[in-house]
Length: 311
Image (cartoon, rainbow, N blue to C red; front, side, top):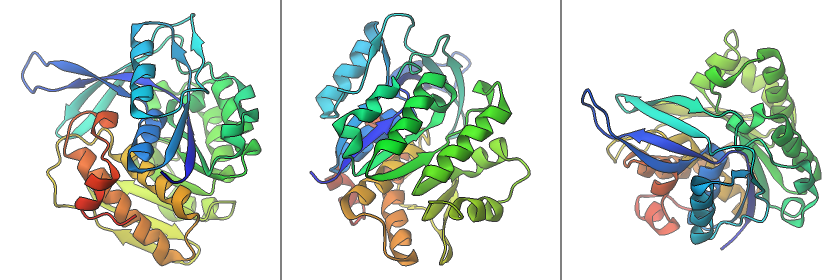
């Protein structure tokens, strides 16, 4: 094992559609973007700690047990009595997921800012966050405190869910704060269009790289991704050797692989180094997209290397 990452944010249950007829069948899979990232990075070989709140119910207990069985640390995970585990209904139009969230209050909204003082955060190689947890006041404060406290690299994936946003001005302010605090940012073209509808990839890249960030990765569904650094911009083709079944966890798999490499090697020395990292990450994403079930389909280091990744 190499590198120590802390992933802060939501754990929830994805109810994933598995049939295409008029009476669809759903199966439960553990999910939440930062939860998936923690599992994915650990399976690739990083020591991983998840920092997220869990409801004190059967689903919350099962998810904590899953993390423990995977070897992901849960010392930074409070258990709360005032909610039920958040559910995300995931239906499909082709391979692309569409989400409906049931969270009132959100079970992932109770991460205390005091976690920033914990040794796991301060000494982490990488601290990561993103997605729905940014919308919850307490957890957002915990994230910003952790970003200030850590001596490690900082990564961010907005993973925008427009139907969950009530105050776009405040949400964009939070996104801006986190982008400006990060060493590496990943964003999908759908996220960009939802959060910044009048902004181009070039303008976002310019603003992102004007701060602390060393690179911006833009994903475009089934099209090549774009990695942008101060030295240039490169379109990197997807790893197209596996069938596409379910893209639910593809972005999280990409992020998990990028974080694993950052924890293992630190920031790349040049643009070509970032491109090579992306190529490895896209192999991991292809493996996850060829199966159902986000966190459950994250590959091991051996599986990723057998498919062509070189960590």
